[in-house]
Length: 97
Image (cartoon, rainbow, N blue to C red; front, side, top):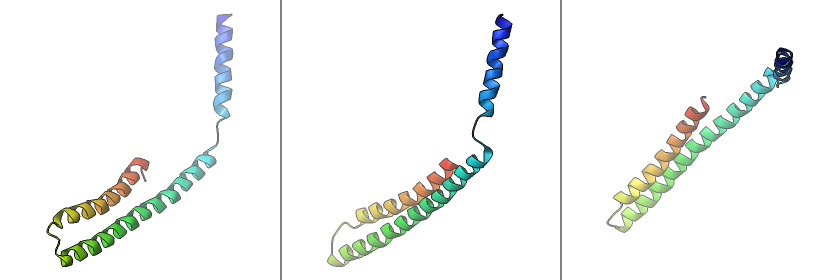
């Protein structure tokens, strides 16, 4: 009786495994992820460029106005842009694309 019950449960497991979503749905989800990811990667690079340009203008303005400590501002704006570039690379590594 136990052997019959065990065999019956194994057959039910096989039927449940056959009812999983197909390969085409998984490929469609992967394609959607890739298109969204490349948009996010481009967005991170654009944000890094914007941070760099805004930072350069503000630092130049402060330098021309004679502010004594612009080296701290240079570091802040540089690392803000650098962080955005690294965030894009991190996303690429996480999603394996």
